[in-house]
Image (cartoon, rainbow, N blue to C red; front, top):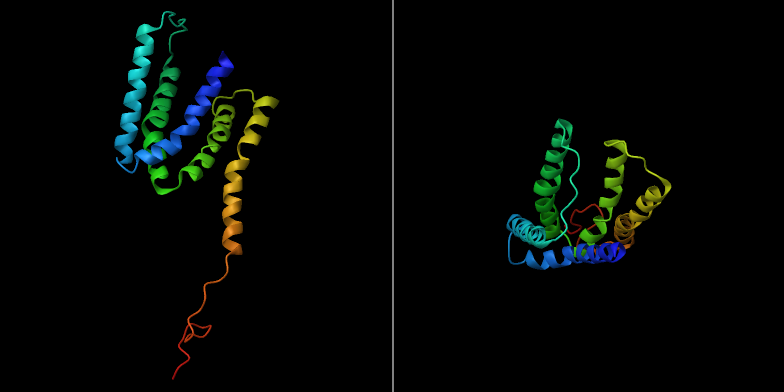
Length: 166
């Protein structure tokens, strides 16, 4: 069941950029980010209300935990959604989807550097496999730029850009 849930989450995440791109034609990015989070909050509120199993309680939050939680909420919940949608508004959905692959790489790096988590071989391999789609996007853009023919010059202009007529 856990694998099925992960696949459904991956499908939903993969659909989010193209669907959000379509919605950005009708509403501004900040408004859409708010609507998306409102919908997620309502859904999670309903799940919490009707879910029969209650989550296990953990240890109480320390002062350090509260600062980390505040940072996660600020960056992941307040700053990231509008920035993602503003970027999506200015680029294609496929470009944004490819660049979203870097989220895995940066998350792994932050876990290792900031939280001193052990990054085993499986996690390192997963991070390494995740970045080539985004890297291929940039490499492809360079190849396309270099392979384009130079624009045709107008007949009355010399190579220096000055007019050759007297």
